[in-house]
Image 1 (tube, rainbow, N blue to C red):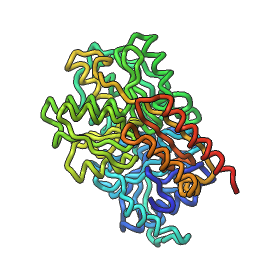
Image 2 (cartoon, rainbow, N blue to C red):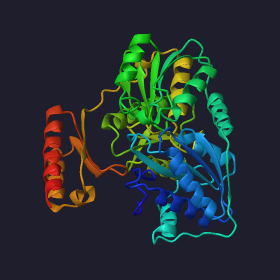
Image 3 (cartoon, rainbow, N blue to C red):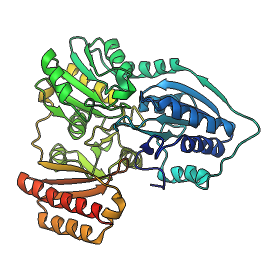
Amino acid sequence: MGLFFGTDGLRGIVNEDLTFSLAYKVGNALGTLCSGAKILVGRDSRISGSYLTLALASGAMSAGAFVVDVGVIPTAGVAYLTRVGSYDYGVVISASHNSGEYNGIKIFDRFGYKLSDKEEERVERCFIHDKTNDYPYIGKFESDANLSKRYIDFLTKSGKDLSGLSVVLDGANGAGGRIAPAVFRKLNASVVASCCSMDGKKINEDCGSLYPQKLIGRVNRYKADVGFAFDGDADRLIAVDEKGGIIDGDMVIYILAKYLKSKGKLNGNTVVGTSHTNMAIEEALKKDGIEFLRTDIGDKYVLAKLMEKNLSLGGEQSGHVILKNTSTTGDGILTAIAIASLLVETGKKASELFDVKLYPQENRNVIVKDKLRIINNEEFASAVAKLQNALENKGRLMVRASGTEPKIRIMVESENVEINKSYADILQELIIKKDGEV
């Protein structure tokens, strides 16, 4: 990670951390790095989306770039259109699962892949000293919302006929709110659309993949076969079975891995997860003859491992799932279509797709003023090491600074629920104490 870019692009509170000027400089940097660049820009439904789109586009045009605004569209839609439309860069203005006061900038290369850490550092070097490159030949700007139809066609062609399947979709009032219902209806599913407005003030507000309770209620109310919840830019998916049981990203990976292996489509009979993936998933996959590889948390690291090993499936517990033979990034709608198609093909109920007993996990997200100062504190590091040693080989403990928010994340996993909670309590209390120290 660089000074500005985190694990998933550049992100912050609008007009505090993420300003018009900073977005302008990012656009200007892209136009500087690629002479005569052709740049596609899309966004989620946040009210600050147009503001930052114009800022980035202005900076890019000042460097001579040609900018096309596709409007509100999922992150994966920008990645797809960048690749098939021969753009030099694809840019998404979105803060993904974060609340409405946040926004962010994600950048894809011409092949539809997120920029690597080194490439992000190149962008940073172009504007880190408050210098922009303004060319005498100003670029052009145009809007073309019709481009999203091409992404809708791609998604529709990826699925099976879903006639007879009843589905509830929670769009998190974000970028997937219009497209996901349209695609599932084209595939002949019976659709109940929930939280699918374009009201940017309500994006991710008590809905979507972070708050599946509303989806569970809708699935139960309408007696649906399955429910799918996305986040603000629809690159995450959390599913709900017909009984109201949650199917998270880990479980989706397990389900799709077994299915793809049965079809001979699981490259290397290997899948990729992260340091957060439940140990029970790894053990169950091993029994099915599927190797499991771990990476750092962040879908860009999962993708890097998939590309390094030429693998086809990977993802995160949070719901980022990458079907690399079909997409270059996490795509919640594409993953939902894959699960729905599997249900129709196998005739199984959603609750029958997953039969692994997971290890209990205790997860905490602690808001702090200076996450790096605490993570690097000697007393805190010593406490973490002591608890890790106490777990021995009977569990796992993970503490990390969030790459997208001012938070420290704690995860304790073992068969003993009380130990998990106790260890998490100890670390949370120490974090709060250290955060209050001057």
